[in-house]
Amino acid sequence: MMEYVTLSNGVKMPVLGYGVYQVTREECERCVLDALKVGYRSIDTVQSYFNEEQVGSAIQKSGVPREDIFLTTKVWIEHYGYEQAKASVLESMRKLRTDYLDLVLLHQPFSDTYGAWRALEELYEEGKIRAIGISNFYADRMVDFASFNRIKPVINQVEVHIFNQQKNAKEWADKYGIQLEAWAPFGEGRGGTFENPVIGEIAAKYGKTPAQVMLRWHIQRGIVVIPKSTHIERMEENFNVFDFVLSDGDMAVIAGLDRAESAFFSHQDPAMVEWFVKMVEERKQQHDSAKEEKNW
Ligand SMILES: NC(=O)c1ccc[n+]([C@@H]2O[C@H](COP(=O)([O-])OP(=O)(O)OC[C@H]3O[C@@H](n4cnc5c(N)ncnc54)[C@H](OP(=O)(O)O)[C@@H]3O)[C@@H](O)[C@H]2O)c1
Image (cartoon, rainbow, N blue to C red; front, side):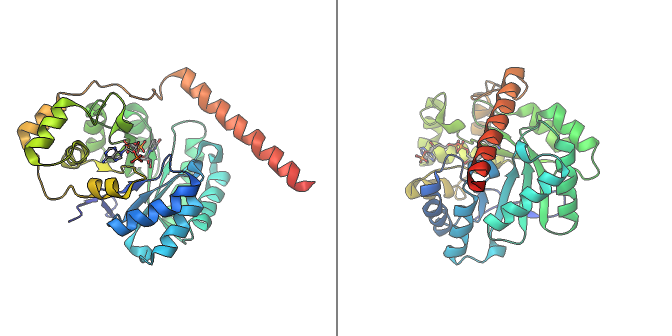
């Protein structure tokens, strides 16, 4: 049976959801329909995955009542600043075919996050968004952001997996009543997470798979997970993690696998910040030239 976390503003959220990063537009509708069929009731998308429309149409076609689904999207950097962020969330709602969102996150800790946050605060107070949060804010930025805004973020979605366990970030998040949510809960398999012998041994002991052990470990740490798979059998496998409990000893053994470093990149690396700036500029140019073509 699904387990839930209660966010600091009282909103209940499934501890396990389905993420649609790197799910192509062509496959997205089928994947979300499959995920809903399997039983997932929390879907995590983002403006910059360009598949919000497919998520929206899958939800509509599924026949699952909208209020039974916890729907998350994230505001992309290009849409930061007050006016643009506000307009972009309304546009996300149109694409997702809904008149409210359960959770909206600021996707990255760059550019005019404060302006964008004012927009989320307003939409939250108007009842158009049930909860607002952040993503990829490291502990220092998270504490700063939580302290100097009128409304505190209820969630921080960050990279968490067996090789990057975010122990320090978790302590700070707990102190500030901010729920941690793991993106790439398997580290996308990087560094051999699925083949790790320690995880394999624990999995064999419980008659479970490595994927199930990793998800169970997150859940028992009190971290929300949103694994992605385009295969329905794996969606089922990843969903079946509520019929066993890892012992304290096994939790401690997994804690020992931590390398405390990203399997992807650091958001504190200036070269990566430049990379984001470049991407935003390139997308803006593409957008402008597409607009010009239309005017022709
Ligand atoms: N906020 C952010 O900046 C951010 C960044 C990255 C991701 N995210 C969110 O987090 C979600 C999950 O992260 P992610 O997709 O990057 O990585 P992930 O969930 O850690 O791993 C996904 C990979 O694992 C494979 N997989 C899934 N279940 C499996 C199983 N039971 N056995 C073996 N392989 C399995 C998938 O392959 P198949 O699909 O082929 O099954 C896919 O290659 C995303 O979809 C997105 O919603 C957010």
